[in-house]
Length: 196
Image 1 (tube, rainbow, N blue to C red):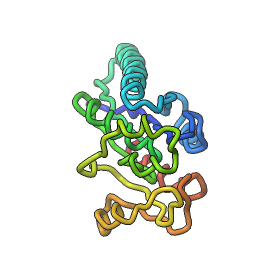
Image 2: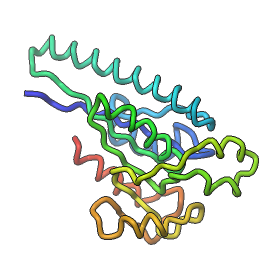
Image 3: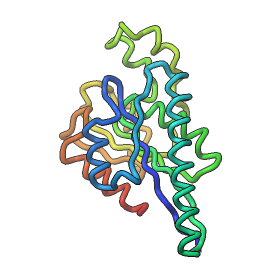
């Protein structure tokens, strides 16, 4: 019988880091063998190349560990499922890497206050306009579970909410901000727990 081993990859947002509070909450709940995050360059091409290489290293290490366990226990084979969790602009990177990773692995996508078209933040960050113009908007909307703050002070989610309203793919929070790292983050953890 085949079992599923989960790897959670957290994609941090602009001006954040791999050790953001949301990552720490995931790490505390699921542990060091399950949760990973890597610094992402603002340049979209560099970010995709470097983060993909780091994810592949994590997968290889997990596969080696699974094979060793299977040899020792002579149990059934294990498969790896990736759970990609993005926050803000990290959602853009999660979606781009999903396109590459889902060719070889089953993937689940969790998007928190997503910035799927970084053009919307160019005016807020003119110092990075030359890099932000290199991002192509994610279209169509990817199959994911969306956690959205209705009154996000950074990104207007009106169009996204309209597109997904009534579906099971969206959870809307009335009293949350863009950072989404208060008690509402427990909903993200509960959603991910269903895969374990």
